[in-house]
Image (cartoon, rainbow, N blue to C red; front, side):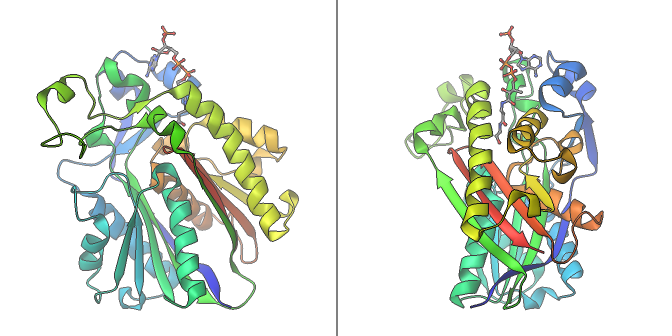
Length: 330
Ligand code: UT7
């Protein structure tokens, strides 16, 4: 049976760098608070009018170049974002058109910070089933236009950034490819990290009362998210390794979703792995939800941190709650 091998990766982030000091001009916060609590020094924000599809297109072209394939080789797009350019349709069809390719399937998925992990698992499933041979998996996010950048929203606003990453997956029968994936959700905690409106539960989806209560912005119970994240990151890693019968020590690189440097460090300690085997770039980009893993994966590959034959674990936790992991032989 074929499985999905990652044959190309790419990423693209907006040019505009927003530092912690820039945010301190907008709200009551400090560079020291943000660095100490999250490890973030700066993040990228789009310019007015720049779309998530545009970021995804740039990342996708780089991933295709890396794979040595033309866009026409893609026979399925899997696009993860919680920030689509419009209420509907999702960004998948926009990306299909922007790439100028045939009328291939475009699967839009959400799954928040776990979006890319779900996307890889879905792509692998399609490839194993024989439904697709070459799948473009994208994670792209624009958070900056949806954040409450006042003191009221500072606990969330300082954490999130914009960007996109992509991977090209191809059907292969050899050693390499996705060896195992695990996916989870726990909706009882959906409201611990969510954005309530626009909502189909309200006529018109939005109204002045909801806007006045700031319910169009993401809200988060930071402490609860923090605690669950550490537990679930560790569990997902153990579970995906067990599913493939692989030992922790055999993994060359762990690429966790970049939620918070303190979370990454606690997970690293709890797993008992050396921090040199855990990738981190949150200092430069903040949390880019579904884009964070593919940006990190692309950076790590370009920096020579992953070699052919290496085992790589992608692991994420986020709103939903959702969490999961993929184990990939490079
Ligand atoms: O993919 C999942 C995405 N989310 C996460 O990973 C977030 C997980 N949670 C966290 O990373 C942390 O909970 C935070 C970084 C969000 C917050 O850190 P904390 O140590 O849990 O702080 P806290 O929420 O308990 O707040 C401590 C204080 C509060 O003031 P008082 O009540 O002690 O006076 C907050 O109002 O810090 C205040 N605060 C801030 N101060 C300066 C909250 N946000 C800020 C801010 N700047 N941006």
